[in-house]
Length: 343
View (cartoon, rainbow, N blue to C red):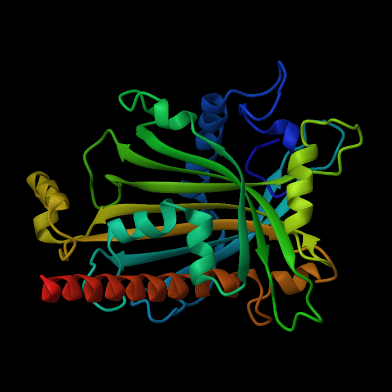
């Protein structure tokens, strides 16, 4: 079975960490991340075209970019020959944003990095109204010591600058008397990537990826278990009546060239190093997710656009992120103007 899947993994499947005992079967972090990348790269490349697209593009103001929404089923083959394959419902959204940190409704590559790659879960709480708590349970510092001249490579893509952590994320919905809070335990990995081939109109030159994988920790049965402390942390934070829910997600932001006459010249790739006011390039934001809210919410409601399910939520996230980014941009400029006046 794959690592990137809706069914949560037990904590015994976590990669090696200094705070966990582990055993001979505990995966090495570098091997675990490589396995994640091997799964994630083809999913991000194939899903936007293999899922069923909506008949129209969606708007998500204040973003100027339209959102292409697709959804469909992914079959997971069970390792047991006589068992039936499992199916997961996946939603994909894709939007192309002008790479600019000045124009209304746009976002630059650096702003994407700063908002989505760094402190992914904490920033999500800032721009997503339903996220009311984020607690970091574990952080893997090992990638910071890896030789950056030795990136992990999958196909023609080199990955480096890894950030890896395990978070407990709580969503609270309204009316709270009717909808119980949802708690998610998410292993999150982010990394930058760069292609070993020259950038083209259809092939990215560089960007970053974030992958989230669901985990679950049942109450330890044996006293003195290595997970006893983590379980206590989780139960102290999770609100009363909360339901443990699960999701897996993949996000990729990649810089591509616009199909202009100038970009047909191989030497035009030098434009990629110009400031973020350039209009000859754009950023493609792709997001894939599968989720299970648990509790008494019917699955068909979770999948419905009309009833505010996952498809509508992931489209709304585009506008929420852009609005938050614009607010941060303006706050930074006001602060800079204030400092200049004082100086």
